[in-house]
Length: 287
Ligand SMILES: O=C(O)/C=C/C(=O)/C=C/C=C(\O)C(=O)O
Image 1 (cartoon, rainbow, N blue to C red):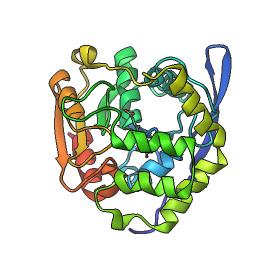
Image 2: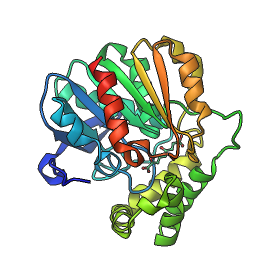
Image 3: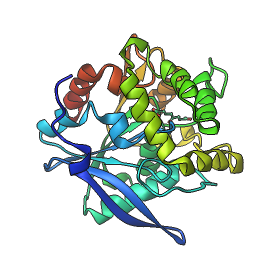
Image 4: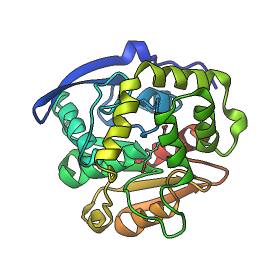
């Protein structure tokens, strides 16, 4: 990996967004400039942030002339924490709407990882006129799998880390994020552990939210036909968090969609196959 050009500190921004009767202090990173904006939405793992999920994808998109915005959803990173009792996909979509309105962005491309994919679909269903193209990676809708018992082994480990945030539990979870564990370094584990332990409130509230409403990510399958945006669906063949047949449901439901499956790839295609993923996304956005 070459030295990263954009830095987290230099691109870090905050904004206050009204959510019901609360004002949430929300963190995002704003990188590069360009006529077209790509907003990246991270997954729901403990310690995930926009920067942690997408640090291998920012520079190539910025260098290709896109403005890239990474939103930390409520309950993650430096954003305010929240106990969420409704649909978390829709909560994140409302926060995203607050952000695009405040930044005066008429239309944006959305790239979502896992929960971020679910949230991108929720946003598109409610505000279709604000969406250019969609990239859904390892996510896009909740719902059952025909082949894999739910919750998946990955989601069970993820919940275990929130309940007991130890380095051993974190390693067990991260070891199945990816196909090739040799790429996981002690530095990466340490950074993720620090993210998690610096915001224990996020972990506690994630568990409390799940207890209040186990269906945090609703099944959008019956509404997928409403999506008109051109959509690139990306999956890892060896995903142990969100099963690959979720990608097939998205492909069947969204008329203007195509699916790319990486071999030797877990739930983090954007990280594990970063170079190929960046080329795929740039080709799709540029068409
Ligand atoms: O339960 C779901 O459908 C969604 C799960 C996730 O969003 C898991 C994501 C995990 C990551 O990608 C992460 O980096 O933590």
